[in-house]
Image (tube, rainbow, N blue to C red; front, top):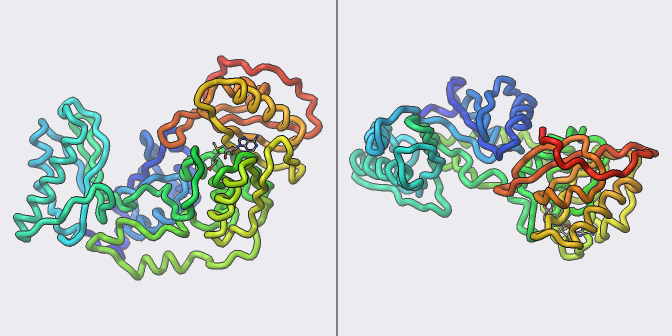
Length: 397
Ligand SMILES: C[S@@+](CC[C@H](N)C(=O)[O-])C[C@H]1O[C@@H](n2cnc3c(N)ncnc32)[C@H](O)[C@@H]1O
């Protein structure tokens, strides 16, 4: 296993994300100094060093996990996976006292059962340890200390170290969630997609547990979203370099004296407002974000211009209540949010029609496993824009 401190930039690093967020992840990487990323399906790839791996785990907002390629090979049949995996010296990656798990994704006719390839690789890992050290590490599928990723596309297998472990949307700031929380990685991706400049006013009138507000405030303060996350699988690898880790941690500012913009949220449910405030309090940006216990109907715009990003209730089934809510939201945006770029994310495509405004942009995205549309409504100041029914046949871009 490579020394962490080496400057060899030859590690193949794959950053996984949700469908629809590949471009914003690429953009984010370019901003962090990795301009040559290659876009893949639900992932982006770069080459780099182990220092980069630590740094990206901490600083990327739009990635789900950071993988480092161990080996890429072709297989002839099912059994060949075990044979090839036995050629890897697994003992150099972690010590026998650490627990591990093998997970991944399989798109291949070779395997009838989707979990079987992971079992084969798990067996190869255990057998290699037994052969070389006469001992074996334990498997822990729920909370493994070390995680391997197996990706099979037809005959091509890629085995990687999952250097993040638990997905990076587990930021560590949220104990308190509502019933339908926004995924943190998706929230950060949507904020980036909206083009918010991190200086102008940011509003979420259905803030729930505060995911958009928190992600926006962390961006505005230039603080990593993983500030309160302490677990990263790379800390359990044989080559973990504490000095480099400390360097990366020490470069993060500890105190924030102000935010460059106003960030305001509201929710009609007082309990949700308490949750949002509790989540915010865990972070150094917490005291700069305002959360009000108001329904959007009684909220006033806090500024003359800015960006609104929100996910209103999706509603299980269409009903008068949801229709009315989206209709009132459209009306409210027209009167209260003049001068704002208003973005709504929802999985309820029918409900969108009741907003009654033509979207300036529509993007298909995923909030976790839920397919959603993210729509922009530019509400011009003093707009006389006629309210009309949205054309349902407009395609997503
Ligand atoms: C899908 S959740 C938002 C989740 C939030 N983004 C999060 O990450 O936790 C929708 C929220 O809208 C709130 N809500 C419903 N009707 C409302 C209204 N008329 N005004 C303001 N909030 C409302 C609910 O209390 C709920 O918290």
